Length: 328
Image (tube, rainbow, N blue to C red; front, side):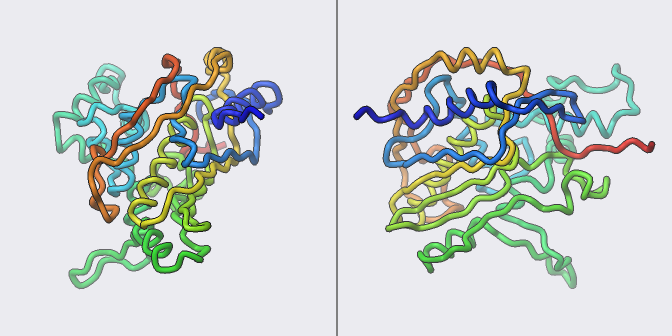
């Protein structure tokens, strides 16, 4: 009996979104999408690394973004300095929001903005930071214990705690890393506190089954065409890295979705991708030893035998995030 390629479950999800998805319109951007709710796909990491093959996935971006998260960073300067521009839009969106009083003539273009992030440290510190996003919340979750008597405010390193938890207790059910902090999100936030950024892949859990480390991601909102291939690769890679650190064999990466959707502006690209046949998944090889989360570096691994179809480009929809209600 011929086995179905693991990538097919992702392609089937996009096909279902096109044929059965409910049309929604984002109230902030006006971008429409075709949505499904409550779906799941699974990848056994012993069957290859799920870097999708029906279009080329930006591997350099996957590695540097994941390291950016794992190292607790939240300023895009690290990414810009490494020529990775997948996060350029949101800081620029915030810059535009906070400088609305400037005329278009005096506002920086996106290209000028990113060049200034690259070359001007002071400007990058002010405008390149995205507060309360993944890296900060994984490694420095803010608590109610404020700074006092020369002591810094208490933060929680969720990622390091979760790693220690599965090492010390392989039977634990509580090794969760959460990125959803209501204090800073959507209309729950005060304007002065909002991060402006919509946390999408908001929680993951580590679990040990039969000596194998598994990871399940809950993604409350998922752009199937542009974002999800990236998310699959990123969290599958995180699973491999954490398995190596904890000493377990790699298990499953389980990807659970809330609202997963195809944007209307991506429909033609999705139809093109659905015509393609998946190819064998690549492999990951670690080239250097590391024993902790803090020791890992992007150049400690190598991607082997990746032979994808050509890339399919599409525009990013900068939807979600803080929404300013009308005074009416």
